[in-house]
Length: 126
Image (cartoon, rainbow, N blue to C red):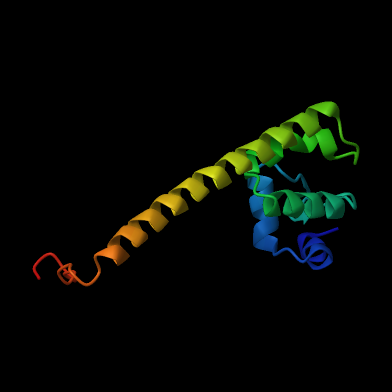
């Protein structure tokens, strides 16, 4: 199928499909006139790519994982890699929570002396 048809079937723009190819996430064949043609399996590949992007994975990681899932079957290596990605997200959430807690502490401290502090300057020249 041509790029426009794949875009319609998947709800992805042709520009996004070209990007997926640039990132080695998707493969097309070229006609003699240079038009892209995709196999029917590309529809499922696009759905998987979008799901992995939505799960927070980078295009580099998706490209590394793609050979493990193109046939629709998960391997132990795939599951391990996805668990590592999840652990990274968990760590990022924990880091953000600590940052939020520190900011809450700063806000609480500033609130305690709100009536005695000087007004904040809006600019350095102020």
